[in-house]
Length: 499
Image (cartoon, rainbow, N blue to C red; front, side):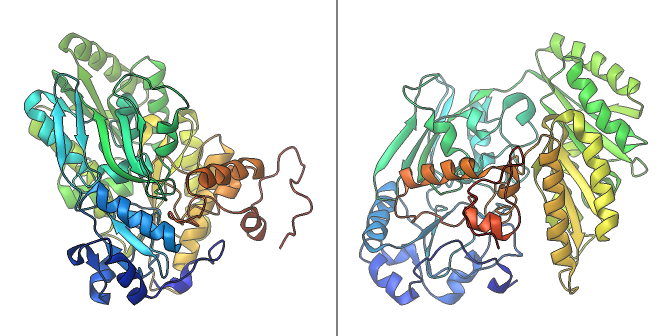
């Protein structure tokens, strides 16, 4: 997809020529850290949301925090825009390049600096893969809990930028709940450490602010992660249902029974069949929906919760409750779930992965609404989501070669997110806003809230050099797209021209 598909940016940005950027950057970085040829820059034109593509003006790959610092001082001096990039697995266009700007890839900063078993922590650079942390900590009987489906490839710096979750975030929390402190380089080259080795740090909770900030406030150069002991016992269940509504209701029943599983995932029939064809995980192809539940902890606790959760599932109408017999079968259950996204890619030329969050009690209503929208727009949907915490990932199937299917998919995705907001949810749970959901921010937030977001951005980045025109829409943009959020029937800023 060309840049013609991307909406106009909010505000003027100077577009530098590649040769100009190269000349300036080569003063502070060695040539081995600079990609200027078009063929070298091409792989960086998008993140995991490949329908949006922009060729970066220049790509740089610093090897140390000092190089990041020198680069940002140079960019601050000359007014050069910088788009930070992790592993490129993001799904909202957060790492989408900006014409005539620098894309700063942190993939070379990929060292695990230390594992501290006594403090149960890991100090890592931003380019370290998520899964590599648990692999390095395993010999100490520890692991890193957040596990996005892309954990084999996604990086810790990107996880912080998007506040990534995963199948185990129901019990162990998102990235923000598993980070002690973050070191970052600000737009002017200043290095700051936010957070503490202690349970809390003095002052405002800026650590939470940084999680999900999508590279708009600073560039992460080090992260201190919390590690937890590997549970002594883990049991994984595969539960089948003849009706999607029964599976959705079972999720709320599990939580109501006082059980907090380590993970509780849901897939509908289309997703089940695609995953089974891809991963051969032993999923029941005839089921309308399945839940994958995982319990972990001491043996007595797990045995008690296992008996209780089986009863809850059977009472909710489960047609089959299967417990993994061994570690190999447990891994196979999860392989199917974590392969769901690429598996769906085999049954459709393209798909559009949404990311909304809702209260668990509203799962049946949202699934019904998605089915109605699927019929309205004439596009099939495979539902795969973190059911336990209400984070939904509807996969809208379409063919970009068809004249209007991408536009219909985007419109349907916007309606799904609006439905999530209407039912008390949010437009993103872990994928971020980026460029993809910037219009839906106007649905989620009122004008005074958006103004506060802009004020926070200004405090960290007064010259708007870090990933501008992502995440936070202007009030004029909201008015133009007809998404101005109105409270109590009163239109804010009545003097603002409406388009």
